[in-house]
Every structure is written in C-alpha cells, then in structure tokens.
Length: 150
Image (cartoon, rainbow, N blue to C red; front, side, top):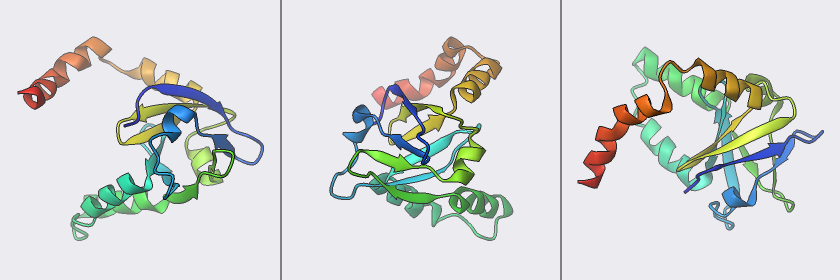
C-alpha cells in the first residue's frame, strides 16, 4: 500500500529516483511500473500487478459508448511501461513531463494502490483551487468509511 509523500528531483536524463518508502511496495521479481496521465495535470504510477487489475476492469468498458471509448483512448495513449534501474530510477517520457508541467522538482504521493507525481507549483495551485476544505470533504466521504467498518 502506497501512502505518504516524498520529494524527488528530475535529473538531466528525465529520470527520478523512486523513494525507498514507495519502492518497498513494488514486486522486485517483476520490477515494472506503468506511468500515464492522471487528473488535474498529475501523473499516475502503477505497479505492474495493480495495472493488470485495472486493465482487466477497463476491458469491460463498452467500446460503443463514446465517453467510455474516449476515456480508454486518452488514458492508455500515454501509458508507458518502465523498469526500476539498478539505482532505483524510473524514466519519465517527454510527453508526460510536458503534460504535468514538471520542471525539476516532483512530489510523489502514495494513493493506496498507485502513486501520483506532481509538479509542486501545479499541486499547490490545485490545492488552493479546491472549494471545500479538507474537513468538509472528510465529512462527505465519512459515510463510505463508516459503511466499510460496519
């Protein structure tokens, strides 16, 4: 399970060192990650096993439904498979770097089954644009948390 956050830096070859707290959740025998476009100008990073679970669900989407078809195209178009190298680095493609407005610094967020990569300025702008406070959102999702605990 991915949780917490860490800061890292993009090197001159478009690589980042994946922080140890996140590496421990990646199967070393497979060592593959899939990176694709996320929401709000972030990038999503899935371990291979979680990606396979997700794509098995996406296979059930209706290709005759325009919205589902459009989502599948947009989501998978930018998906890139990468491997952790011997120094625990992953390569970000130029199209994903541009999409996420990444310059040098990156925030890595743990989101349970995946990670999210953000340019710090983009993340701050996103955080400041939220109409509801953390407490208001927590109140709205509390019913889901409570129903799981029952």
